[in-house]
Amino acid sequence: MLEETRMKLEEYRMTHNLPKIENYGMCVEHNPVSKDIYKFISEVDFANGDFFVFKSGGDGDNGEFLMSLLDEYFEKVWTMKADLCYGER
Image (cartoon, rainbow, N blue to C red):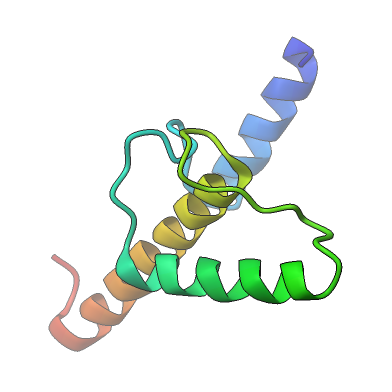
């Protein structure tokens, strides 16, 4: 990836307050809810032609990355809900 493109993507990520995912699912114990959602999406995709060809179990597979994205989402949502219930920490 060109450095200019990398800089633009990093600027976009920071401007929109998005998490930086550095491990891409490598050696990560995923949130159980992320795993359940991945299993459902993967099975539905497979039964409908396998468009995404999801794979998991090996570090860096597209399924592992999807679960990492879901992990980040749930961490953000659950943190926001906790802040609303208990006040910011």
